[in-house]
Length: 219
Length: 311
Image (cartoon, rainbow over the protein chains, first blue to last red):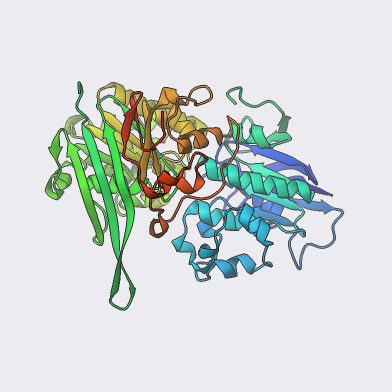
């Protein structure tokens, strides 16, 4: 299976400036691809377009080898940077977690989620604890691609390593493709098979991507 | 002792009293035995995961904790024990905070004016502001913007600029880097280094060890509301074998630039703290004694550690 973005351009209605222009991007099942760009280059916008949260102004996103994605479980799942904004504040954690079906217990244990957290409100957990929930709820056999948008930027190193370990092990086992969006070149270097850079010459428009396997030598 | 710390926090404890049901009140202790020392000309990075008490420490030093907070322990500034009145007098003048949330800006005042409040030298205010704006790549017209007109990164830069142009002797920066791109982060870190090199002291609170290691002289590792270790930045070099506490070693190994290996488990919540060492349930070196005895902070190889078996 392949997730492909063809000549994606995007701008908001009230603005003439394009945030994304003529972006081509593709990822195969089972592949881990890093997306590297400074802030303001439209990484998050591209993530939302790939996951179907935003419609591109022109161009299209194609999921090759998969039928309609308009109803039922979305095969492309997005994990947001801020987990506190991605959960319903008026639901307890158990309900949030079981919305798309309760994950198996061994996965819950691997993610380090404690039983006592289930009966709490989202405000009663720390960012690292919440992000474990947000990650585990996309780990389903119906998920074909995961877009991880700065998934562990707000977390300490141990929690970061824990979460990536679980997500990547699951993705490998179920042949899920993972797009890793991060400004941390060391992290991308560690987890990705291939890196796509979105940096162009001009600040306001992103030129078509340059693929590179070379990232900063400091890692 | 040859040098006296400009800021010293001894055995700080913070609890919050909460009403659970009706008039039933509980005290939740969120910080226990927190110790930090800050010297002039030095950058101390305070590193820990969320919920480890980093921001509360900053708020305790400035005396801006919420009303339901009860503190114990002592905070010394220049060798003098701080009273709540002292804190109120010092904050903003001698001790400046770069707050974590960009909501701390006054929403009804143009940002240029807000920055000028902190500049003591009234004659050169305009130059100082345009100088710092230029350095951070903020356009001249941004001075006349109101906070709602700023992007997250711009607001962060304005907060930084405010503290940097003040004459304070101590700067406490609470997570100064999220939302900034790499070039701006490097600029900010370099500014902190320059500030420290002029004899001022910087406490940088962060969860990002990699950023901290770039500039800090010392690193204090927080875990579940306690200081587990204070290490020199050089101790993280190589394989980190010079680090003292098992948690710090694990943290170092978990970095993507190192082995990227996690340890199982999570930081205990304030109401579920173990009796003995706070890290005992995750520690590979745990013994029976660790479960019953909470280790005291001891000095080892020019650093401090709270572990019974550290060498």
